[in-house]
Amino acid sequence: MTGERHTDPPAPTPACRSGPATSTSAGAARSSWLPRRRPTTEPGATEEFQLHLIYVDAAHHGCGAGPALLHAVLDPDESAALWVADPNPRAQAFYRKHRFLPDGRSKSEDGVREARWVRPTGTS
Image 1 (cartoon, rainbow, N blue to C red):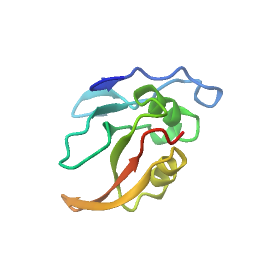
Image 2 (cartoon, rainbow, N blue to C red):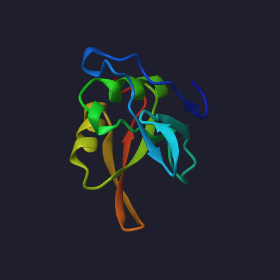
Image 3 (cartoon, rainbow, N blue to C red):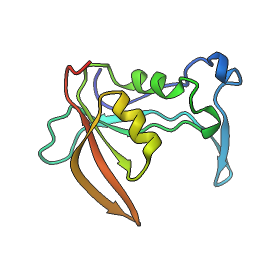
Image 4 (tube, one colour):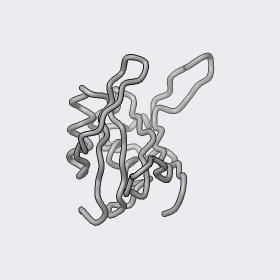
């Protein structure tokens, strides 16, 4: 897999029979399923990709959408990095389950602290 990639929502599972929920932001409907990755551009980074965004509406948490979206944009053996809000125990548990670990870097923007998590190549 190369470069920036987006994906369509996964097929609904029994727990998500209604499919992706939608919400309105600034008057425009948007999907609640938004996986996106980009090549890593951070200085000194060794990971191939940065998971830029993965969002599942809270109404669909626990139905398998998160893992399906993650696997749709990242191959299991690709190295990747991401920034996750800290604290955000639910998101951090999700990423830990998928072999991401904090690398000790953090930043704060607009009052939100984020921690950088990485998954090395071939850790499946």
